[in-house]
Length: 419
Ligand SMILES: [Zn+2]
Image (cartoon, rainbow, N blue to C red; front, side):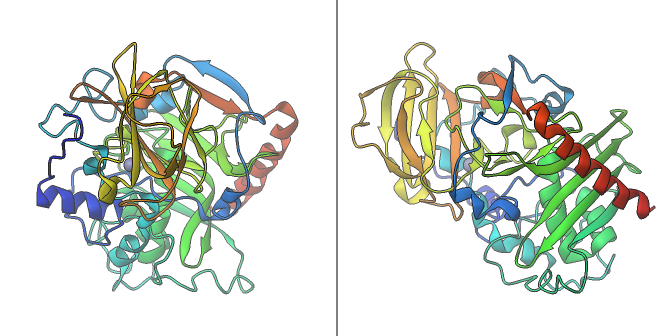
């Protein structure tokens, strides 16, 4: 199986390409199964990304063996995939990872824009639920798409931060389109999903009359920023909320709950100490086989376990610079794709030690935004890193919690004022 490449069926491949958005091709709608797009990053912090590391330094760690809160648990129950069962045992299950993914996040520039192209941007502008902007059709609208340009350009004329209340009737996208218009709604839903995925299974748990409320900011050609988000889920009987905040010493803004805990989980022995945002999970319903970490080119990639190198650069066109290592104890294999470069000494057979720097993240192969695709396999099975790794949740130090509270008050007032 090593090095074997099994071509993905054309139809499915096209679907994934469009789904990732990189190819800019429309993705066939799948009405009953909203796809969560965890795509390229929150634009607010995109440039800052080059600067430094989030690291754990500004955060305290709460280690958990399992996802500690309902957040990830619900996210992970999305698909019947646990470490043993999530295996894709199909013939091409263990093929090089990139077959499982078309392209990765940032490439998704234009698809979102295409999805909404031709639809006038007025609220509810004739776009019924899913009509051309169904959940799968929108990739990330950020980046290089010209569509939507200027949306945030006249920021002097209007407050940059806006409030929207999304009343769910069918999908999150359709609710967003109803609330803020077609073009903005699609893009807004994409970003909001990256928070919501940690709270519930969007394909199953979002019911009619649930609400998702947002304070957001348009960024012209870049994707919107979600500064604050509130969820009220009738099915789960929960209310959740988070605000976007940049911790001191951190390069990236992240969503925190009122207690100052990040809403994203992190991996222990993660291949990345620093990254901006997770843009794709195995549990998000997209069928993606890896976890995508949006991160600037040049971020060090660390060995998540000790073992040996098994493959290197086996499908450059697709995967870019890529590396596979195998855990000497468990037999699990870790695959890293789209690397900028790999340390020269890591050739097949070379020993690696956990925590050792193996490579640097990049944007090579079928990827159009800097990120790391991280995939775990055992035999023919694809494993969910969030089930294999132990996880932890970062929290702000007590000294910074008032700042987050303040944001909750500020955005809460916007929310109140609009109702
Ligand atoms: Zn990926």
